[in-house]
Image 1: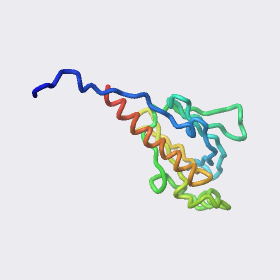
Image 2 (image 1 turned 90 degrees about the vertical axis):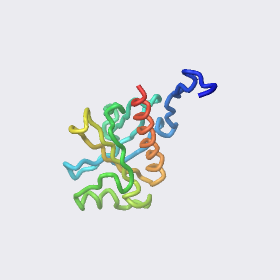
Image 3 (image 1 turned 90 degrees about the horizontal axis):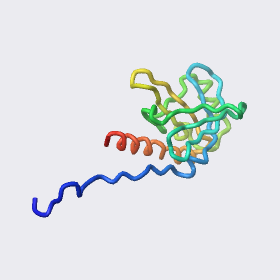
Image 4 (image 1 turned 30 degrees about the vertical axis):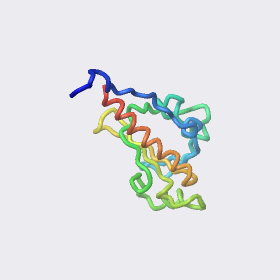
Length: 150
């Protein structure tokens, strides 16, 4: 090709920018398939986007941590896991004028490989908060693209 120079078309990777709202965090209701109890948690990312933290509102001194490199998928809306127990589903949706339960759900699939996976199921108080965290899904896809470049 005339005029083409080797190495001119090198890919310039920019650092991943984590939005301020993900760094600041939001309040969610966390639920497990194993139990019918729910927990109010505060979910946030670190400034570089390497870790996902959540703190139980009742145990402020204790936080749980998830390395984003172990996150396999983030599912939102109708693709998120819904509670199978009707009482739990009703409990998550009761007295909430923040929108439909389906639009407020977020499931984060994580694990060391594709066989041994776990789920972090949370429900936002309002649809707007869930929409902000849907960008976390885009962030993960960007992370996968960057990881596949090397």
